[in-house]
Image (cartoon, rainbow, N blue to C red; front, side, top):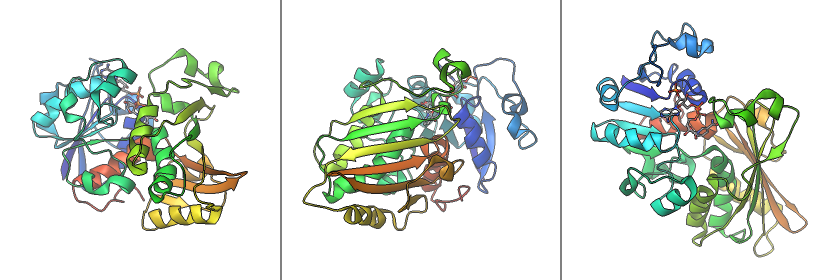
Length: 336
Ligand SMILES: NC(=O)c1ccc[n+]([C@@H]2O[C@H](COP(=O)([O-])OP(=O)(O)OC[C@H]3O[C@@H](n4cnc5c(N)ncnc54)[C@H](OP(=O)(O)O)[C@@H]3O)[C@@H](O)[C@H]2O)c1
């Protein structure tokens, strides 16, 4: 059995991760961390997991975690995460990091967008980006994997194959996303209180969202030229789910069928990406590791629409998929 620890185990992604790991045949969850000092039981923190695992949450140091675990899932915010990840790696653990700390290759871009100095910058360019459908070989056997952001997962899965095939232009990409409120995590913030966001739809962080450089980095890799996406996220009053609509210019008179064919070819053997003819919705992927994608040609623009569950394919499901690859286990274990 592989002994697994979860850092930041009080959060939403940790709860989803636990329910996946508790049905994983190769995993034993051996440590859960919190900054709380009162050692709450798992059932106190996540009542939906009552009776599934007899463990308390503890304020553990990285070396205490490393003594108890082979693999650590870091469900901490950025900056707090890298500070402990480097100690865990030095102690021999493997790590799947949910935060943004190892997703970007360039420390300067990280500092510009996240406004903090990276405590482990040298490791950034060599850390695999944990989107198995596009970077599988670099994830296999890795000691550290950077789990992608939720919005980037939805946008990149739709756009990267089209850029790689050269059927759309890397210039002028517009990405519009809507996310359920769990995307903001469990830590309370006024804008996410029920009376503030219910019955309301709002854009936020326009031109400033931190997922922008992450999307550019990956799309630029496939386009083989820098992209400069216009990314506008919105908060929508649902618990979970992301719907992303992207607008791109076609190249060389390509039609909608050709665009869909590129996506179908790219994902024909992928267990978790479904290229569909109908318009996707978040309900059909809720609580699953699937990403549903379609494309249309509308008045001279290619329009892609993709949906994921932000907490599963956008976070914990992707982490388990990466974990399976890191340990050479069947990639769908605990996910289908
Ligand atoms: N929510 C999503 O849809 C989503 C999707 C993709 C990626 N992510 C990323 O995944 C990570 C976890 O997200 P989440 O939504 O689960 O967040 P969350 O619900 O807010 O949980 C994060 C946990 O980390 C602990 N924590 C907070 N600040 C900390 C600090 N400064 N030092 C140490 N521990 C701290 C907290 O636990 P205690 O207060 O108990 O210590 C908290 O419960 C974040 O990096 C997030 O950006 C989230």
